[in-house]
Amino acid sequence: MKRQNKRSAEVLRETKETRISLRLILEGSGRSRIETPIPFLNHMLELLTHHGSFDLSLKAEGDIDVGYHHTVEDIGICLGDAFSRCWGDLKHIRRYGSALLPMDESLVMAVVDISRRPHLSYGWKPRRVRLEGFDTALIKEFFQALVNRSAITLHLRVLAGENLHHIIEAMFKGFGRAVAEAGSLQDRGPSIRSSKGLL
Image 1: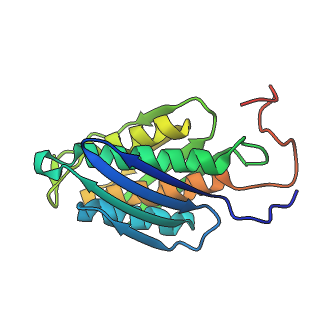
Image 2: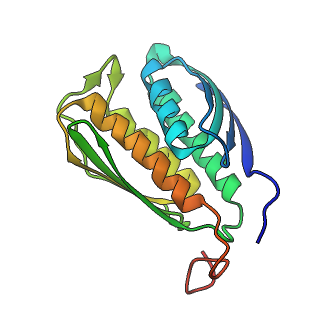
């Protein structure tokens, strides 16, 4: 099984609340060009891209005068759509991926199943609502939107940590590594990683 072309996808989403353009290349080198009005999210997406070895170009505008929610959620939607398009019919993908990611005192586990059964298991309740002007509850909203549109199962577990920035950073890094592993191509075994023969 040989693939000559890099798997990539472009997504454009325009609503009354946001305008987002995104290009994702799975077999990349960790390069990112991210322009959104939310600096903290920009940083997290750069980390996700770097640790997943993707290439990501993203430009987003949103109604941040009423809050970050619409913009954060719609970016998750677009990134989820892009992953799904890159994976295509799911043939020859590894399907499962996991990462145990330390960030100083913090430790996060991320586990991905590209299953076409969207489910997010998110067992973290931050002790503080805001971090660097960002509502930490929106982290879950971002991953929920991404999970719904990419149709993956994602488990995120915070095993240790005190510093909120470190915990969230470990989440994005860990997810990047886990989803990269799950979506990677393999030569051996059945083309569809399911005993049913279909995902």
